[in-house]
Image 1: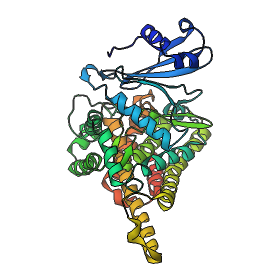
Image 2: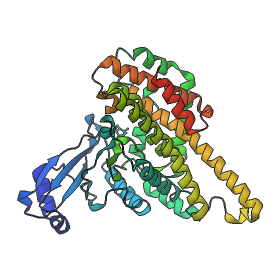
Image 3: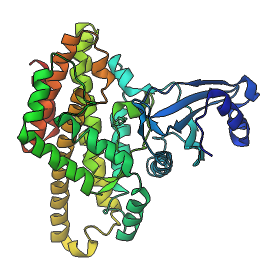
Image 4: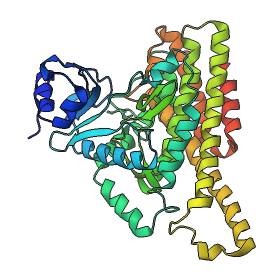
Length: 416
Ligand code: SR1
């Protein structure tokens, strides 16, 4: 029954859904419908009636960015829907409400987020989001903790892993585009040439880096720690002054927690290092960039605080059985173990943040933080700084023991 919907087809389809008709209001013929998708994979329609609006996302049977030569399973819409429902339960009001899902059409209708915009665009415009640290740290702490072995029984966890095991085509995109292609000759790689030609070649020849990225790849492939969003960059976050909403979890699967946290931190650091290439007054630039680094610090600090607090108060999972940590000595030892766990998670976060940065500069899918810097030489300067920082975060990960060490290194490379 799958068919790619055009605007007219969508109108007819939605007109047959009483709850959607009631939500939108007015006659279907009067609804405004426009396709606004600017992501790499899907169609996205905004539909507005007299009393409300919705966003409708339909998966295409291929990668939109590349075309029909790169087929992609429609089943990703199923996994995205599952993840949205799961996240809505664990992190209420931080993901859009699902109003309708149609498996065969690979289509999901969600509440329309207004006046939200894609966070990446807001950051390019030097807009600050005062709720962001609070909201994203809650989202990360709750979705990761409550899908982990610290919260679930072994059986529940394994059922969860099985529910998402079929989403391997989306994982394969990540495995190739993030963990492999930027470090080898790959047809689809691109970078700001000729300025970064030598750097791209050096990354392709750097065996230390190849070991480091391969260790991260192995962690991504073989560490089902929690149900992760899987693509948590600033293009997957919609923001308004008073609200933060995480969207597009079609890459969701049980993977390493640090991949999601690193995605947020890596993308904020890219926004920071791209800022030098965007039009701003000197005062605005300095204060916005300072806010970005405070935000990087806040994301990790608040995430870690909330995650550990959940572990102290809500640990019902089969990991760390309570019976093994009885008494005062057990409690003290378990608390030390929590800190050790967070230190390991921080190391993963640093490594994944670096991987997410390198892929956006040397791989297929770039981000507008850098792409919208019109002057290519200036763009290459910003990108080269980001690559330098990412390389050191990936190769010297153990030297980054605190989030302050990461922001200090970012500040130093900003003047390089
Ligand atoms: C071919 S898909 C390229 C990228 O778009 C998505 O947003 C993911 O980041 C993926 O790696």
